[in-house]
Amino acid sequence: MYFLYIDPGTGSVLISLISSIFLLIWTNIKSFLYKSPYLFKKNDFNGELNFSNDIVFFNEGLKYWNVFKPILDELVKVNQPFIYLTSDLDDPGLNFSSTLCKSLYVGPMKSSLFLLNSLKAKILITTTPQLNILEWKCSENVIHYCYIFHSPVDIHAYKFFSFDYFDSILCTSDFQIRNLEYLNNLRKIKSQQLFKTGCTYYDLIENYTDFSDRDNILIAPTWGDRTFFFENGEILIQKLISLGHKVILRPHPQSWISDKEKLKSIISNFRDNPLFKLDENIDNRNSFINSKLLITDITSGIIYDSILIYKTPILAVDYDNDNVGYELSNLESNPSTKFLIQDFGKLISQKDILKIDKYLSLKIKISEDDFKNHIYNFRNSGEVASNQILSVYKSLKP
Image 1 (spheres, rainbow, N blue to C red):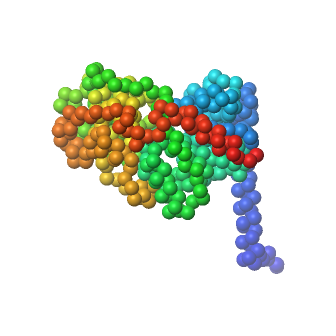
Image 2: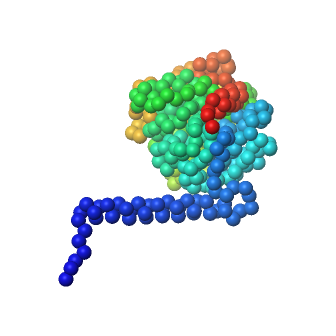
Image 3: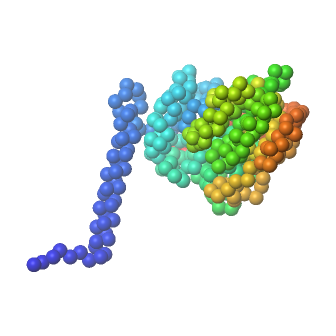
């Protein structure tokens, strides 16, 4: 009787070959599944993102529309066509009223990233970090990747390697540029273009200075393991209410996804209290114009909104957390919010929450001249960003 014998070397090659075949088949199946919802729709998107010579924007959700709108408005003014892709069916960008704009819904986030991996474009502008790190990979058919910050907050609270593979970054302040340059030198990253842009959504927000009807205390923590709130939030709310203060809780939008059960547990204890109000809106305007004080985390980008737009005093909690996996652990500088608080607010510790009544009468005086060191091109960054994007776009070879 003869037995089929395969030597170890040949067996290894066969296993690798079979694995490669199955991987190729699975990749093609995934590609079809992600494209299939669009193949039978009566629109002009067939599941292929082929915009080889175009400026392309990608927005992951409704909450970032106000970052893109000032730029798109400026591109229309100079008669520049562009493509706008979104993974949110509620994104107002899908109804952007200009013949120069082609807007497409490209499916929920996971399938959007898969499609973006084969995108063809001259330049892609996005607020989505961590390019080429997890599921989202650089496409060989995109010449230039450009990142734009959706908030003026510094880079410390971003995950490792959030910006390493972008060709250019539209920055909001000197703080971001200095820290990005530091990381580039540390990691020997290829040269990036770091632009002095600003925070584009500030172009759209009315400036508020009337304090006469503000009688709430706004608690607006960040999300995940970067916040004091899930450890001390219930104590803080209870303390404020016991002192007779009206409280607005405005969780970070991501908390409704990442921290949902923790939030529900805390909210359930206060929902029926007449002094407690929950704000779930994307827009923070109503909460701010009715609040005399903000309590938040030292790393939260809402600190900038509070000071620059609403002139609201801030108590920032310096939360001691695990920095593993965040850019903070590779940086030697303090987050820019600490410098902002030094100028316009007060930094407190977690222990200070138990004696919060000592800090509730905080008053600050703020003028636009005072914060020029903290933000670029205040209320004019849409035009600046548009010009910077066009400059890069025109410099790229087909």
